[in-house]
Length: 205
Length: 350
Image (cartoon, rainbow over all chains, first blue to last red; front, top):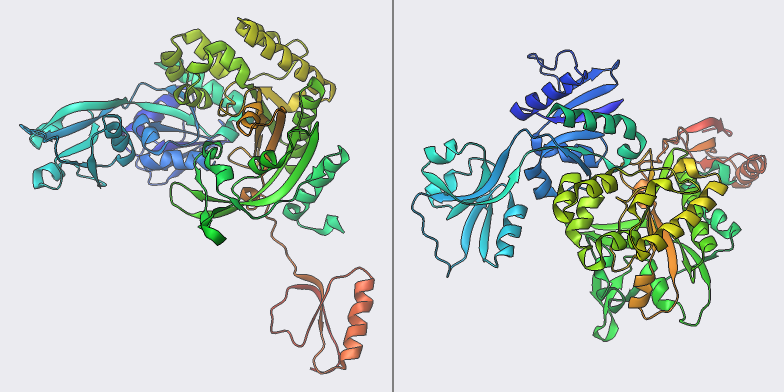
């Protein structure tokens, strides 16, 4: 049995769609079923639906053998896993954004609100720029509007949310997309099955 | 007697017997050492912080975070060949949450190992150690010298090694500019064979040839030991090139979610301590396996002897008599302690 951790939500639906094309579907997965675990014993797979930022946690600890997770999460948490392939979906980027017309004062530390403290700190350390990090868990766009921070470092897909909040992109830190990851120990013992999924996933692109 | 011990307590004894049968000697070390031993080689202990405190005279002391460094520091430069094993608890602080942890670490070091036989001996012992933990195991073998030959020493940086360790073909292809090479290195995972034909395409210069010859000699011995089924040549097995210059090992068991064994040839680390010998070794992280090997015990004792107000001499005699028959006997005045026994014997009146 191969345990697969998928992110709940839109990306998860897209990813499941791909697994379905490989013949690894599960009854109830596409409907309104509220369960978090789905199993197809015949195909030898079990899906676990978890919070997107928790997928890597399940995989690192071996509760899931493989999983699909955004590169943004991998960069932030640096889990010890195999990153087997880029699925080419869930494309987005982590950017620095500020209120329209913001002018940076390089003589004072920059206040940055973000969900990605690690990625952001590394980015500014690379520029030798002193910053004050403010860790938020959601509605990051609100921070510069209310004066909580000067800029934000956040994930952007189309840029609509930024525009609607009168924010604009200053620079892109990194591009992200969904990745197929595997637990290092599970990969050794289920290599054929995992490699098979990876190869067929790549052909789907 | 040892068959009666729970699996987790039995393993260190079985490992010890395995190493002693091959003539390795037990190494015992102090809990504390001066911090200087570790300061210059902190990166050897990746991702972990050392727990320090101030000793007498203001010397900065460390709770030992690792055994290998201390063995290397203490080995005489004149010593020709030293074969040691250890079974110690080490202390580390996780960088992520600052949590202090005590980890059981069992390992083996062969200082002065520089021929094909000695290298194979250590790898075979690594494989046999894993077999004791779980019959479903795999030992991955890589070669830092091979990688240095392919990429050049100066290119073997953190970024490249991280891409390799993660089998991340796309990232490795960007770094080295060779998609085919990235594909080969990230997917290579083969059982050792006598001629290692699957590696021939990677031999490009003197250095890769030397590493190839070394791996070939090792593979032949591993095949002779009948271990090929449990071993994989896998170049995503990497370790810091500052310390490791030859073969590197990573061991996995099906019961555990992360590698339980790590090691390799660390001639580079020996030079950092100004020691002329070459060396190879490995460590097994047993502490983290406690949960994996936990077996719930149904009973606390074979016999619960409840003696109430009986004559103490009689109680002693009765208990010893039953123990002489091989039973474990727990004597209690009454049954209030909630002991789970296979059999309860009540003596006299309560």
